[in-house]
Length: 104
View 1: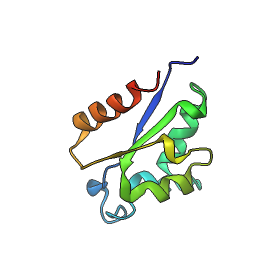
View 2: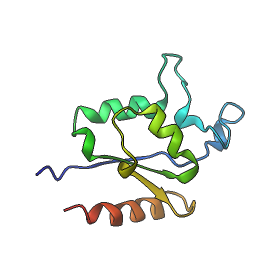
View 3: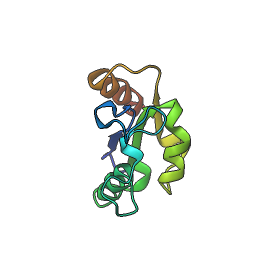
View 4: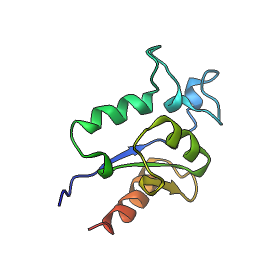
């Protein structure tokens, strides 16, 4: 049993990166570096070196579920933790930790 988990936060609207980042397609989903991969995809690939794919979870807003499932091959809907509301970083981490605690 592998008790190492990765939690990637990808629920923000990226308002400081406006006008590139928009509410319906924020910066984590953009190819900022011009290399054909979004910031989220690059982050996910880095963590695959540390943890099995099934132990990587994405905490996000429900409006971004489809984008994440499209961008990250191998991520299943069960690996998405959708925040009930946007409340910034600390509540996001607390909520996701509570959800992950029940895994084992």
